[in-house]
Image 1 (cartoon, rainbow, N blue to C red):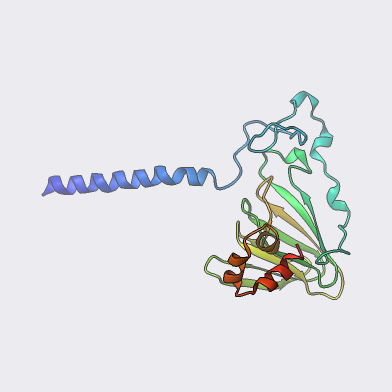
Image 2 (cartoon, rainbow, N blue to C red):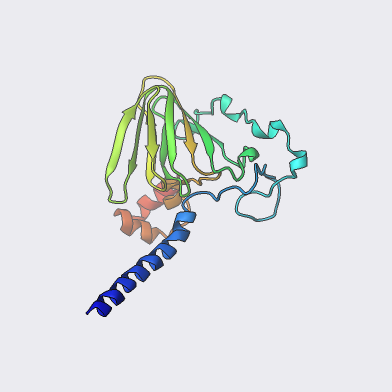
Length: 221
C-alpha cells in the first residue's frame, strides 16, 4: 500500500515537472527577448533577417541614437477616419532595438477613429493628453470593456485583444501610447478582412452579406 502511494506521489511530481517544462518556453516568449548587452542600436537599412534589427557597431553609436523627435509633431488627421498614428517603434527609433518597449502618438480630429485593431506582440497603455476618447477592447469571451477617458486618464489594452479609440469630444484629441515591444505589430481588422483578398464567399457567410455588399465594402480598402 505504502509503495503504491509512493509511486503515485512520484507520478504526480513527474507530471508537474513535465508541465513546468512544457510551459517554460511559453513564459520565455511572452514578450521581447531580454537584451544581452547594454544596447543594440538597430540598422534599419540592413537586409539581414533577424528577430529584431542588426546592431550597429558600438563604436559608432552616439547620444543621438537615443533621441527621437517624431512625436513632437501632430499627425495629419484630414484624411481617412480622422485620425493619425505616429509610431516610435524600432523601425523609426532604432535606439529601441532589443529594449522591449515603444511608443506612439495618436491624434484625432473631431469624431476621429482609430479603427478596431490588435497588437499581437504587445500590451498597450494609453494616456490622454487632450480631449475625450471613447476607448475599449473585446475579450476572447466577446465581452466589451469600454469607457470614456479624459485628460490625464490612463487606459490599458491587454496584449492581442481587439481594441479601438474614438474622439467623442467637441474638439481635437491627442494621446500617447506605450507598448511593451519594440515592434508590437498592428493588424487593423477592417483592412485585414476586406482588403487582404479573402474569398468573397468566406466574408458573405461570416457576416451575412451578399456578394455585392462584400464588393462594395472591399472597394474602400
